[in-house]
Length: 402
Ligand code: ADP
Ligand code: MG
View 1 (cartoon, rainbow, N blue to C red):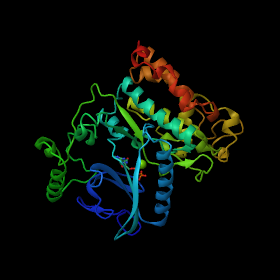
View 2: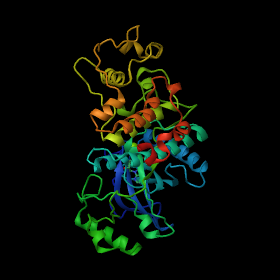
View 3: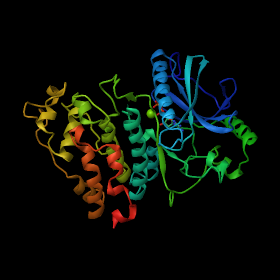
């Protein structure tokens, strides 16, 4: 993808926006962009630089994302809504074309990394609750205040936030990535060369005083911590697929495993698609497993498998819902039964939590009471983010477990 119209190849030390931003290391990438840690020489802090592919459609998408992020920033002057903050944007020309660059506040690792870090065993219910609260605060402001549907909520798109108080420790609070990474390769996919490391260290020396031990960890200033006793907070990122509630442009939205049933059957969607994805994320954080992991099976589409998995866990989809989507005929007969999958194994969510994931009966019950309404086949019946925030399960972590 590093060709005309594609990604912009960045090297450590590259300058952007007339020398204001200096690339430090790659943080991640997506279908549309690569994201780099950069040092902002003007404000003397680290930022995330999202560099979009250059083809026209990607530039359109970047402008769309910038529009949404600007509205989000305007609606949240105190930056407390758990959504990533837009700081700046500009165009950068390179050998592959003109690339929109979006400058964002620098955040930590994604929830996907957090789940992997815990060896896919779940991160503990107290931490799940903390993270759920942050995501719900974000969804509440997006949905109710701004009228934005995120439409691609998933663990990769929720990033951890430093809980170090910048006033107490301005230097440390700049080094946000949270997780210890024993593997050493921190460059999101490709390792540094010796020269890159040297350059990085040199650049950084000029900026902040750093201990030798931290530099030796993969050539990257890592703030090493274990998860114990950390009050996890996070922010929602990636508005590349988000839309205004009243200006929807795509029928097929969301990443497969987090996709709501109404999107699959084509019956229109609203804010409640994000609530469905939110429930999938909460389950995944608590258990380390995807809630729904549909596959292509012989003679069946992934969509059919997905609907079958949903019905195994949640019961039959009400006939009036199953049969009224633009794609209903692909999957359901007129009684609302799946055409090609006749036998469904059913599992109740609370039994699944106890039997497969060793939850206590009490934990399984309270977590199910929280999750189950979010997974209503009827989008109108799903609780809103504001209603969810009132749920007793989220209030006092210890009490709910007692
Ligand atoms: P795409 O639209 O291409 O999927 P994203 O906005 O999701 O791009 O960014 C891709 C990846 O870059 C994320 O999954 C994350 O790992 C990293 N990333 C994005 N924004 C930030 C940020 N503000 N701070 C730190 N890392 C980020
Ligand atoms: Mg993304």
